Length: 257
Image (tube, rainbow, N blue to C red):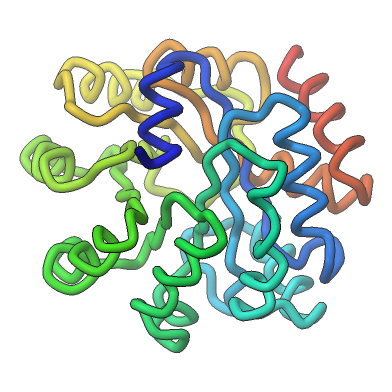
């Protein structure tokens, strides 16, 4: 069974997933960050594939991607850094990026390398759902790589149910239609969106991401989904503090406030 499915079968509440960008803060820090987060009790990790035009990301993650590219990070280099990660990391690992680098690599080769390195899922925010169904899903299924789809407050109920019926793993529930970034709280409109989707009783579990940075936003995510995804806040701390252990400790302190 895919590790993502195993995780949600075992623990379906209060899950915490962290995102960071491969190649940031240093070219060779990827494996160390993964191991530190896994040892620190994080349930799932999203590894960002740096791209020159990350349209869904705010300034913090854009800056990290730029630094990673300057550090020489490529998809090929990332896979080489992940080759032995499964010797001591058991939690689900997901690659998150944009279509362009994946298409250039070749999607079947990409899925093959994911399988070889122990990558469990992929998030491609700019992948059209029609292309996913026709061209990507059949290939990904052969390699047991889950393609995780996103929904936003603007996604219709009909489309949410269609996504739920044709995906597996979990649904990435974006808190707003804006780019990634830190928010102090979720307003009534966002909470109404969470409750609306929660009341649809979807087949797939959901993880809420974008804007989670403190106790209020974290608890709101926990109360309305299986868990939370934190990106910008952790990336910011990693950039400032320079090592994953201190960044994770600082993040936990921030989430207690």
